[in-house]
Image (cartoon, rainbow, N blue to C red; front, side):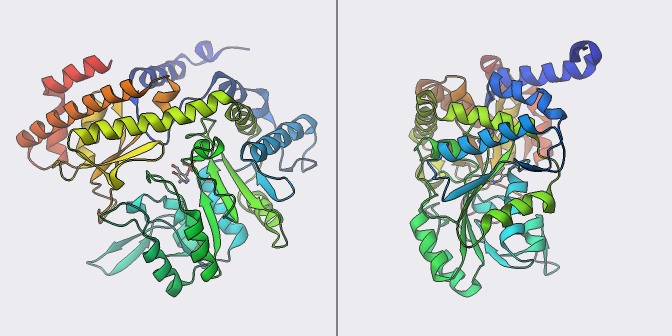
Length: 436
Ligand code: PLP
């Protein structure tokens, strides 16, 4: 048994570099977190060697006595973590990640070219909820994600001024489009979800209602966001964001006469996936154990407090937060009034080792030139940062913005010219030293 360090020093060194980058920088990407040693131990365990196509008790390979127990434990904990009655809800813990989980739901519950409505990407939705790009010049529409290749999608949006989901617009358009499924959830929505309103619209149009709670699943499990389970037919999630587990996905479905259990299980395997990644499933299981502790509840509360402290501090400096603030783990900072694009600001933040991402903000017409940045509190809260730390981060972000605006005066509008000047900027260099 040779260690990675001895077997492949080149790769070992790259992993060390990435580890250092993660610990040195201020990690503010809203979809990222730092997993525990227990989760890491599962990922590097003997479970990675095993094939286990099928479900516990019904596998296509021998030698699954132990793996069956691992997967069953994960299923049980998943239902318990969300307070679900196993008679009424089931869960499939095999999706490799969030995108395959969503596609498995569509594959199982829809027919090809059925209509769906999800939150538009520039409004904070996710690609897997359906997205097209349009060329005005050529008068064409191009499906960007497979969801829009195989299903007909029509988006709903957030209101350009309030930044909240435009339920009236959704009700109006759903009345005409008659979607087979409406999808709630998003990647950059700083507010809680009004599932009652979604359910009403779905019922009025005979649509199924799905929630993709990928971003907020840790907050839902701890009661820090409204639970979608009272209203939705099916709920998907990733496990590596606010839930703080390994990269994976889960699908929760109602067990009733509609037969979702068989349809979804068969969509995952054999329709879309092969052998489940039992090392990941074990990682999810051990994380779900942690999620049910009082400590994780305190963590989730702190995540929200930190995001709020950051938003308030930035607002006190006159900056605009989309929707006027946050109710969850993320903040969407609208940089348009400040006079810079999300792309340029992200480059400056990267330079000073503050990691965040450019993002569309309400009112943006295209996802290609995003007008803001998305900032998340999950990862740094795992590193035990509290409100005063996040206020200090807001001060740093303010300093970076002032430096970025000065740089833009020198470089002119082009991103390439702007980026070329970063290396010579003394103010940004001094901020980077303080971050490090
Ligand atoms: N759904 C939402 C709401 C997401 O934000 C993401 C990823 O960020 C996904 C699905 C896809 O997850 P994955 O990247 O694990 O495929």
